[in-house]
Amino acid sequence: KGSNSTAYSPVGKGSNFDEESQISPLMANSTEQQNSSYNNQTQSILQPLQMMDQQYLQNSQKHQPQQTQQQHQQQPIQNHKPIPLPKIHNWQLLSPTEWSYCRNSHQPKPPRSHFDHVTNALVLNMDHYCPWMFNTVGYFNYRYFFNFLCFVTTGLFYGMCICLRPFLHLSGWAYRHQIRESGGYQVSLRQIKVVHHLKKNSFIPTPDERSAVAFAFMLCLAVGLAVLCLAGFHLYLVLSAQSTIEFHGNCAKRRRKTNGVPWKNPYSVGWRGNWQFIYGKKSRSGFGGMITGMLPSGREPEYLPIPINGTLVRRKNFGGAKSKKVDVEMGSAKDKRVG
Image (cartoon, rainbow, N blue to C red; front, top):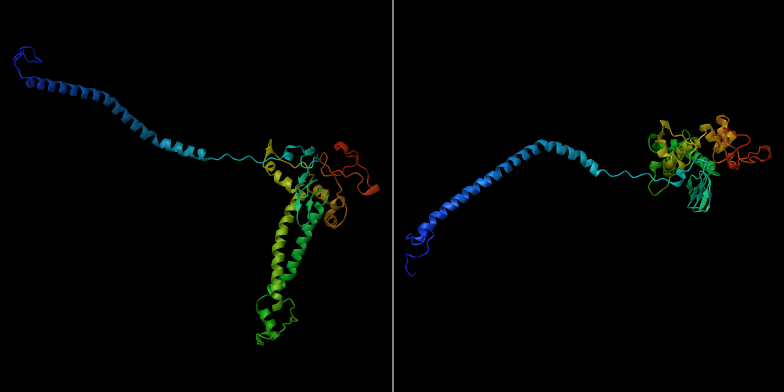
């Protein structure tokens, strides 16, 4: 046991080979074999993966423009915001002659009536609250409001016509000639010289009248155009049997068609009948009757707030004992109807 010949050797007992000389070639051979086998295995695994990668890149390059187009097509859909639904009021869901209940005044609500939050009253055929009239415009005073617009427009344009010729002579040869004739340019600044109108043309303003003429003309022109636009809008409402509230509520209905038939206002009886509804029966007899119907008077509306079966019905006991009575209970007219 103590001799060197009996030392452990991987070859076998009793071998005289050196230990290092025997182990190193064996380890080198084993590592080469392991490396070669590992390389073969990795190549066998990586080759199909590389082929798959190449095929994926080729397919991605082919489908890349199609995907970008789909993305561009889907992008506005993703960014598209939902269209808000129009606000619908309770009165828009009712029929033209249907009654309802007013939750503000706790009263039965007739057709075409609305609650006014300024005066806290339920107004029949309410149009709007007018601060110039200090009242709510409705069934009993709409004629006065429309007359107010027409008379104000006429008065403003009349004032504009009066100021037109003096306004055109505010500067120019005639204005300077008038000052020279009065000796206005020969006076010192401390003295006051009165400039008189020329006998030939009295429409030429004096220096003291220039500011007033210019202000009056511009004021009448600006306010007259504004009131004219408002009067034209209400003239359209009169001839189409609508109020301002109904006009805004019927905007969506006018764009809608039922079976290809455009929407028709159920309260309209033709433009002549609609004018007669506001100004009475006498206003229907030609253009002169329309003008005389617009003259100021204290008479009440002649017809009911809504037409029945497409015709205007006169109010009960309207005009005293001479007019025939009309039974309008339950929406039925048993006597004369005017259409």
